[in-house]
Image 1 (cartoon, chains in turn yellow, green):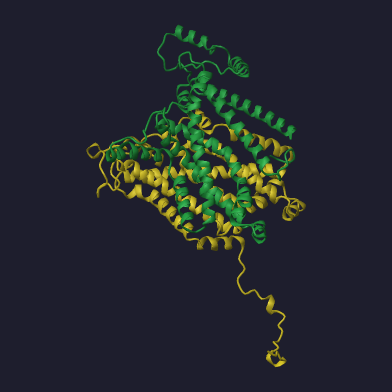
Image 2 (cartoon, helix red, strand yellow):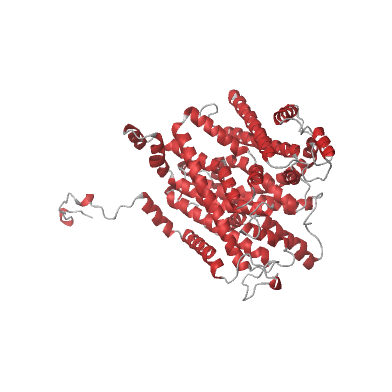
Length: 306
Length: 314
């Protein structure tokens, strides 16, 4: 086939055309959020978590029963229209107790994760940014704390401070920040070589300002992902503590203590174990799946891989 | 290399010393002593305390303990009549170790295999199944799983089949170990499956895999020679934490399945304030842990030649 000149048409050249931005530019976070919204599993998990949180706040108030009022005439009932999840051996309404326990378990998870974040991020940030001898000593301390059997430290702490909600949260914060510190230190080591840090130093910013204003925000992605994994970890560990009898004290209940009570009744009244166990499992599942989605959204390199 | 090993060993000793000291101080800060709950006359109590050296000033007790420890003597348990801590450890740790080993033997290779399978059959049925198992393993607390298994095998199975396949408590034969080891390993299996899947997918996306494919290697050769080896690296680092996880988990599992392991004595020592037993078991567990972490670091350096030992951080 012959290609003649007539077949082609000359277009007027427009200098500005190829400079035109056809789509609105997205920042890193907008882009991440867009990816997160498209991830169906993560969004469903988020909705489930929202519902669980909402129920934990509202349900004990509107259930018509108090979480700690015993009613011996109605003890050990199976689920019915009056008691949706049945009652325990003291006749307390399990529906109310499970949502009340949700408050406790979720607070333990969230508060200890936050404390974790504050201590770990600052410690890791300082160690990573200053480097050298300071880093060496600080990381050696982390290593030592890391190797102390956490259960023992926790038991000793609880015996000194008395067992209770506050102690559990504090003990977990004391124990778990080392993981966060390691993560943040690794991130900071990578980031501190970059030009924006040099620019900040040149402008006379103090080290603590550089860490808080420049380095930590840039490491926010991995920190957030690790946080979504810390919360279920804390809830899980609290359940474990309840099992060995170190949980919150009666009549206050957490999912862990409820499941632990249910375990003793497993032969006769399975509902007492099934409901709290399901509450723990669903929450864990939602947190883990949401965390996965968040990681994929924040780290496009891994997109669609996991 | 050897300098690095020596340095690490020095750090390990320091770590161990810090742990001993910390435990010693915290233990004595707890109100009460091993004999608080006993009813006895002051004279008897004083004699007992003298027998175990509790009447000495605290710093003397500490120095004596350290000295004994250096000679490998963990002391005499204060609440288990005249049994030494060494004896208790030697007798009961093998039980915990066997349980833990059995859990690891099925969970680690199982998790790796499932993860690889999931990565290779990504987004197809085997992947979905592996992820389901892994997600369930991560979401269900060990004691709930253990209780449900006991119900299943102790009650339901017996009712339907009239025999006992796996006993739900006790220790001795292999079949006693099946259920506890299964519970103990489940979390590990789940963790390794996820880890291995991510890691494998990451490696399969690398350019050198494309190169290997381009030069005509068969799929199985690519997987065995290139992908698997490289994707094992992050998994090796996890081994240290896994040992801890399994030790911690065995506390619960031993209690539920009535297994005479060391975990039981550890828990008991703390509630009864049995000073020597608390210190002994802690030092023992901590020592194990430190050695495990050290070995993992060494293994990591052996597996990955890119890590230069002696320079930078381990």
